[in-house]
Length: 249
Ligand SMILES: Nc1ncnc2c1ncn2[C@@H]1O[C@H](COP(=O)(O)OP(=O)(O)OP(=O)(O)O)[C@@H](O)[C@H]1O
Image (cartoon, rainbow, N blue to C red; front, side):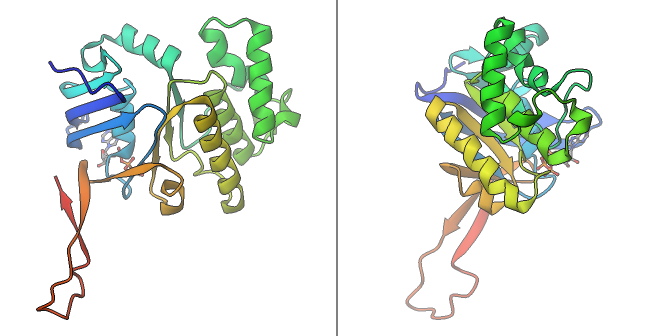
């Protein structure tokens, strides 16, 4: 077993995944994510973006291939160790806001920090800071059902950022937001990641969202797709359709 390159915080090799019902998920993906990098994972619906993020973050057990987080082989860890890794080092944003209805907004946003052992006062201060940045600070004492859907997603994003995770996995994080809101929330998220050195793996099928990333890897049918730009041929002036083609490898 060969450890990943030093400057990759996350690294996968020949990652295959089949869903329990036999549906194909990933067909042999290798990639590295550098420390502090914002990496977009793009591709059409059903191309495997969510499955890849779940395998990289230890939510799904990897049975074929390798996933490394720094020098930790995630693919060999048991459920309890993967759970600890997720709690202590990773953040996660779902496409839909999943908040605890019995807790108010700041308690929801502070929860991951408290689960990591932070005191209530410090966790509350961090949560309130992020809720303010995401323009939902005024709602900190409300319950989730009193907020609009888009506001709940902002709370979920604040909750993911408050503990400053080493790696933040964001699965279509702005899907529930109105188009006008998306730019602001995405810029807040990416600026926060850059200023706190948080590595981000961002699944999206929106080219505008991917454009905010440092780099994009594209998926199709559970495999990486590489776009190859072919040079124009001087012998063939009709180059229509030759400018770029995609290879699935
Ligand atoms: N829990 C599951 N059980 C069975 N098959 C699944 C499950 N989750 C996803 N799949 C299948 O795995 C493939 C990849 O799905 P995945 O959700 O990872 O793609 P995606 O690119 O994230 O799509 P979307 O943009 O719609 O979220 C699809 O064929 C999908 O139907």
